[in-house]
Image 1 (cartoon, rainbow, N blue to C red):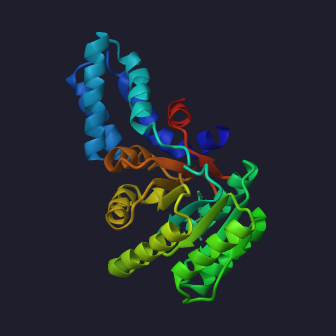
Image 2 (cartoon, rainbow, N blue to C red):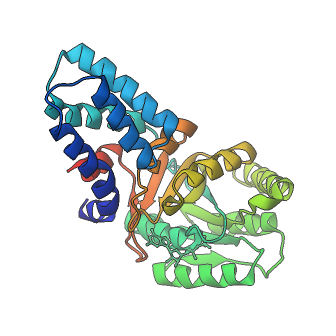
Image 3 (cartoon, helix red, strand yellow):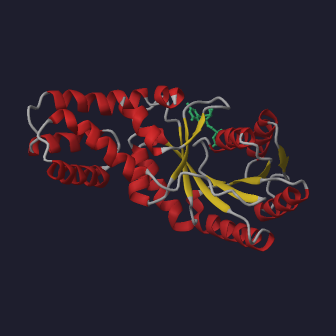
Length: 298
Ligand code: GDP
């Protein structure tokens, strides 16, 4: 919890501190208060439509509770945002094995995230096997290998340029043979080549369906929180080509744009599964809406 709190320092300073200051300048709850609040939310990368939804819900809550005291707005807001972000945070990985595909464009923190996730799953008693199915760059395979070693998990790899679906096939075969609980596959996320990406993901999905038909599956998209509303757009583009089941939002530390977490869940309806709050191996936190809101607001 402390880690999340520290990671959210900048977002808290820009969003919540501003909004507390604003509330202090009001003696009663009126339309001007809602408008100023909406502006602060938009400035904090919560996005226009999500900010408007939050304020609409707040108006309803204020009416419902009959309160006129601005100091009660913070608690009402906490409840509204927690409710909006709740649901589906847990990874769906109860079968042995389960298969997780991780997608994301270069630089968002995908490799680091897979490394950290391996460590987190291992800590939870899961035997993890990595599949290096981002075969587009040799560096990607090497870098994943470094993380596999750091996290103490096994990895299946082919050479650069190999068929990603073949890597996934081998990873599933190896995972089953070695008794892995979770097969975690890196995949390429080249958005500028949508047709290829779509074909590649479709082929990988067919392999998984054939080789692991009754297994739990996740398709996670890694997004960089420092890109703010661009992260939302990126998610929408990926959602159109891949059946996403969850989002990992990285680099929440060091950005004031953490409000984007709220927008993503609301606008895409895809749950956040993890948040990245630093570069170290234990800087990835399973997402929990109530903890997130508590850390953000207090
Ligand atoms: P990839 O190209 O998507 O695989 O990205 P990498 O995993 O190589 O990460 C790119 C950079 O982002 C590296 O310098 C990472 O250390 C950094 N990074 C990844 N996740 C986080 C995070 O949660 N917080 C911070 N501050 N840096 C991160």
